[in-house]
Length: 372
Ligand code: GDP
Image (cartoon, rainbow, N blue to C red; front, side, top):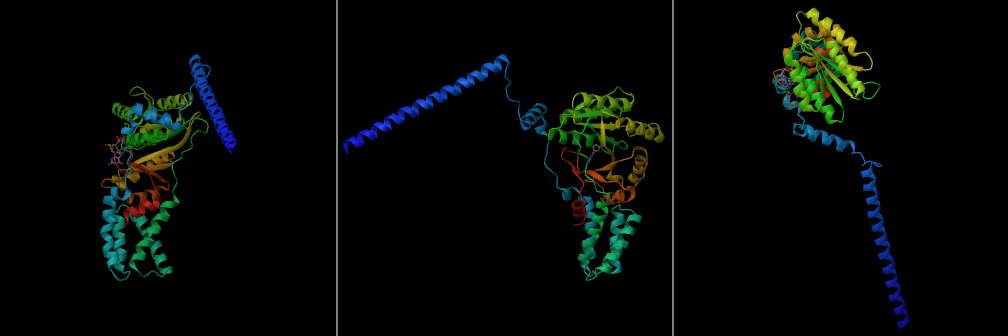
């Protein structure tokens, strides 16, 4: 028995000694390999591991103060208060009746026209709705409102398309922004620049409005705020060549995205349209990949904006609309009028002045936000 105990004690002692030696060697080996790594780094044979994309973006943001920008996502229905109030005012009278009466149709017509949907579109919407109500034997006012929403969403979805985020396919992606002065072009470019830099993209702004010194200064401020770079020309320089220089620089220095601003006003409207045609042609040349030509429209200008829009559409072959200032006194229905009249998608909406106040246009959410 005593011998067994002695043998067991000896076995434990031997195992402890062997384990200790193993751990000591391992830690020596690892500190040796660390020393080896440091020496190699010092003599330049091995480089320190590169930072991850997230670390690099965080560093860039800290360097450029982007984290100080307010990225709180806005709530659509809170921002569309005016548009919502307008429709909302008609809902109680339609819903308060026991059934669908002639007066209910008059209320809907008035609400749509006052909301800037436009006469022709309103007429066509209500005609379709009457057919649906008859076919589906709708009797309840609440079902009438639900069908109206479905009809509006259906129409908006006919032209719905998201922004073209085609990055890394050949040369740099180019998005061109057109629209009259004051509609929010620079602000939209700034918001998008900040968003794409935040997403890890290398962004270059092209100050193509060379006719107003203030325009490129304002764009420069957005470049600083957003962490993008900027290419400017001297005042009065040829806008097409400023934009083309930017695209060539972007290709040479591996930028992902060029956001190009353009003039909103020239001596005559014909001059402006000719200039924009040229800018569009040049922007579509290699090495750039012109993916978006976006018309920026101020939603508060209502039906007047539509006339402008047709002129820009003819000159520049638009791919979409950015509808700004929907948070202000805009009545919301203009989105439906644009979609109906121009047949081009609304891709983004501006619902405030801060950096996060630019969101993708989603027909369902939009209709729910204005009719609820
Ligand atoms: P640009 O002349 O087309 O470049 O227009 P700016 O970008 O200079 O914008 C004109 C004004 O509209 C500025 O005061 C912007 O802050 C404001 N603005 C732009 N977008 C919005 C928006 O979505 N909502 C609100 N409320 N103001 C906006």
